[in-house]
Length: 192
Image 1: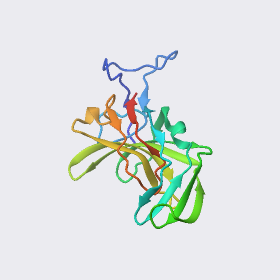
Image 2: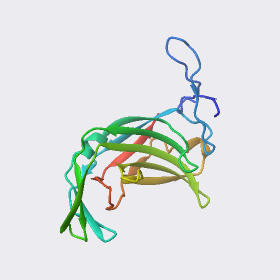
Image 3: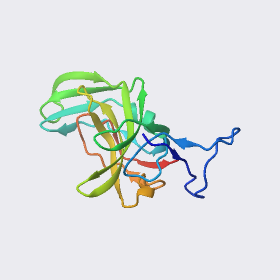
């Protein structure tokens, strides 16, 4: 794990810790980026609960709401372990965020089971795929198999390793109906 000096992105001057005048360092390593902050802030706006019947892969589900309110607003994410050869910043919100009812077949006709939504992971991934570099902002519900289901999903490409997080750019939620999607619409912005 590398240790790097943290810089103010607008002035490019070294940041110092208030009161101690020590140089702030970044104990986070990301091979795709030049300078990697240990913490980033993601601000979500205008996400709404997706409480409509959602058809996916021959099945369907209904969410009774509550998760969007937990996501909207500002969240501090910290550097996490590498996720599938990506650089990752993450946070998990826990609480009571409603219930998802699952149905056999489409159009929510034959009830199968319910699941309580008790955690919502938020993460930012920086990765490369097929020669293109991406920054993803995602939030979702942990499925029973612990896979993060996207309820907020958007990615922006980047070319320059200095701007790999797309700081200040707006990510627009383009997640389609999926098994564990609980929100729709909205935007996200990454800041330091």
